[in-house]
Structures are given as C-alpha cells and as structure tokens.
Length: 388
Image (cartoon, rainbow, N blue to C red; front, side, top):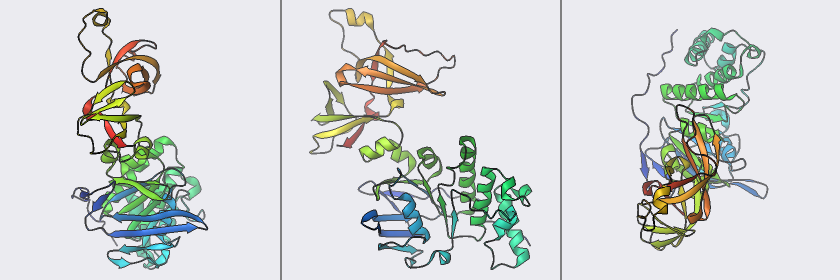
C-alpha cells in the first residue's frame, strides 16, 4: 500500500502584520496560547505569555538558559500544566487535554529511540492504531523522507548521532501530527552535522506543511530555520519577529545584544536627528521619538566602514573638515575569523572603542595594522536607536 505525502508547499511564508510593540500578529493562527503562567513553588517561570502559531509556520523559541523556553514547550506539549492561561488549537480549547490526546509530534535532544528496535520498528512504534502492514509502509515512507531508506533494519547503536535524530524525526512525523515540537534537537551533534540536519528538518517541515515550534539556545539555528523567532527573557517574550527584522530592528538592548554582535553606547538626544556620544555629535537617518532624551545608539560591526587616514590633509592648517559621519580612530587589535576579520578601533571622540568587521581579502592580506590611524564611518541608515 502506498501512502502519498502532500506535495511541497507552493505558497509563501505566513504573512506577518506589524502592530505596536515588539510582537507581530499572525493571521488565522492554528494554535494560540494566551496568558500562560507557570510557577514552580515561589518561582514564576512563565509570566503571562501570549503566543500564536500560524499555519505551516516554523517558530523558534530562543533565549538564554533559564528564560522559560523549554517550560513553554512542555506546557504546549502537555507534559507540564500551566497555573493560568489558555491553549486553543483550531479554536478548540486543549488546555486541560493530556499530552497523549493532543496529537503532537515531539523530537527530543536525546533521540529517545528504543535500542532493541530497528530504525523502521522505532518509526512504526507510534502507529499502533494502524494495521501492521500499513504501519511498516508508513514507517518506510517516513524513513525515505529523511533519506534513511537504506538504514531501515539497523539498530540505533549502528547509526550515527545525526542518523538517530533523523529516525526520531521520522517517528514524530509518522502519525501525521497536528504540530511538530522540537526540544533542542541538534545540540548534541557536532557542528557540520548540525548545519546539515537543520536544513533537512526545515525541508521536511515545508514538504509536509506542518506548523512547528523548536526550542534552541543557538541564535544561528534560529535565524537560519525560523519563519519567526520568539526571543524570551525571564519568563516573558522580549520580541517576536521575522529573523531579518529581529536582527535589523531590535526592540531592546537585550534583543540587540543577544542576537548577533553590536556596538551599543549611551547617547543623549541633542536635536530632531542628532545625538551626542562622548564628545561626538552624530546624525541619524530618522527623527528621534518625541520626548526621548536618553537612549542607546547602536551599529552592527559589519556596518562600520573603515577608511584610510589622510595624514596630508590633517597637517594642513586650513584642512577641510572630515567627511560626514566620520571619526578619527586608531586600530587597537584585530582577529582573523576565517571568512571575515574583526577589528577593535579606539575612537577618542566617542570616548569608546568600536568593533568592525570586513570580509577577508582574497590574498589574505590584512589592510590595517595594530596602532595604525584610520577613519571610522558610521552610516546614518545603519544606526539603531534603542530606548535606554
């Protein structure tokens, strides 16, 4: 018997509508969590969390250890019971429904395979309601989907870590779950396998058109895999945005610092589009929020531009002013990072040092030496204004 899988999705990613604040509204969510509170004794681990999951959407819960992301997944799965709040699936209340009745597929970090069962037997294990022959057909089809069709009769001990995780993924998907939940599924794997498997998980999820929620502490995984990243802090959602927006428009200093690298300085508004950092007055591309006096000014290292220092111009008594948005600096240090080079530059006018990055030249030559003078340009469009 052949069990046909759905064809690959042709539609684009779910549409996100902006609204006030660091969250984005989801059109016609299939799952909704409202006001979720979870306490362990006197400790509040989840504090009034609201989260919607759209159809076919891949959501990553990201944040530092202890922020509540795994507890939120366990509440969603039904392993933990919330102290307050509601969970609805397709408009139906499942808050009190036990985990076994929610029909969610779950993939854990530890694989959780039965060592005495082969790969195909592990996948077929959750298909008890299906006739025996059909169970094996479905299990084999799932193994083919994760490119393990040739390993069906191997026991877990004879599979690599990445292969075991593929078996776990196939097992979670075999019963056609309504939602796929992944609890740090890649953290036990080495870097190369992790990079490959994250693409495979995303491919399978898109092929089956199933909504998915994944917990991770790895920002690269979240940015690469998710339609939307939910950044958590101290039991609350700090920002929930598409990966590109989370990186390019962080809503807080925490979001800016946690996702990627950023230069961030205390600043003071001195005009509609001008701030002061140290002794430097810096122009920004947009009007500052009304009434904002103290703020943080930020720029990503890859947006910082370094230019040669014009010693001849500097020696002239009536030298022309420096180019707009430029400040004199001195290279303090540099670090070779493979595809790019990271520099640390002291900028006296800012009363601070600044991190800059640029692609490694084809000849491997580093154009800036330690102690060398340079000009640092901060493009106005690249500057972030963040509430202090």
